[in-house]
Image (cartoon, rainbow, N blue to C red):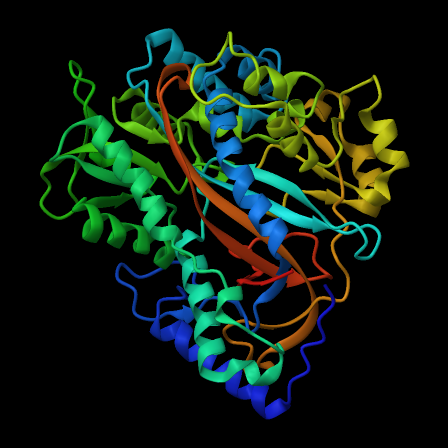
Length: 503
């Protein structure tokens, strides 16, 4: 896996010029940093990017694609198993007892169940993230899952543009010989935006009102707007579906539900006319900062009370929790979701399917476990571990030498909200050149890197996941320097990348 990428200074400068120009010309963009974004964007910067595609084993890429349909169905079934989610994530038995954000979401879901849930269909736009595990320096490289995302799985559109960028550089320069024998066939194409849009369009069709529109719930001052807008353009151009973008603050003033039909309507920001909503797509709502007041939770509850199809529902959001990922690794749990034909209709799975999924997981346990786990094991193995809470969005984990001191301050009652996971040992000596807007004279910075592969998928499913449509929906690569443990692009740790498949 080690690649030196020896390239001259003039060649590197030309590749950097071509890459950043292409990014600006083709929508591989971010809004610039600012405390408050103007109502209409007046400027943009290119997204952080890698100059070269990352060499990646063809067999592991194919395996990740093969796993996605299994995960699509698995998490659809998890989201329809109320008893399991109550036990793992609930505020009475599970992680929600000690994690206030998780508990608040669960209590909203429990209230919805008590009232009677209005919409039985659920949509998930998923992303399963992987690292290569290489503990013996290339002798036995394997694919290991980092996490499974069930809400706001971002960068689908920009991943398409970053792969197109690298194909352009290969066509225009052949990378000046940095990849001997380079073939465009080894740079996989990526059509993530159209596939994700198809999932949203399928939800709209199941809802059954041609004049309804799709609601994107977004964060204030969103810098990653171009990634979202590409989905909006796909929905309009390929499916003739209109999108309304609203923040939670906007929805406090604009959202209402018909008391009889449970139809969700939003006041159009320009015409002020009420627009029926078929599908609610959450690009916000995954972090406590999205709910600064109880009013914001109340708006989430109002949206969930409607008969619009949610992407995701609260229960599907809870299914993406780290405690669920850890619970699925326990003996017999995965089998109960995939092999028990007395519980589930639909696709039949085999023991080989179960073995493939289990092989993609590192060892995990809960910090509250007394039998074979807990904090004592986390202390003794700290240098090979990461601790994870029930949070999304990056910057929340605790790594290696920081673990013992963190455990000293973690109240016993809060251990149930955390899991310990064995660290994935990534390949060494992988080199790339990373470019961030505003880097000035630094230009492209040469560094040893780690690359994380994300595979997108979507699933639209009814009660008990008996009826389910789903597909694998493209891929994403995020690359960072080896000096960083965290890996989010939006949080500034990683850059957007793509793959060069090798045998």
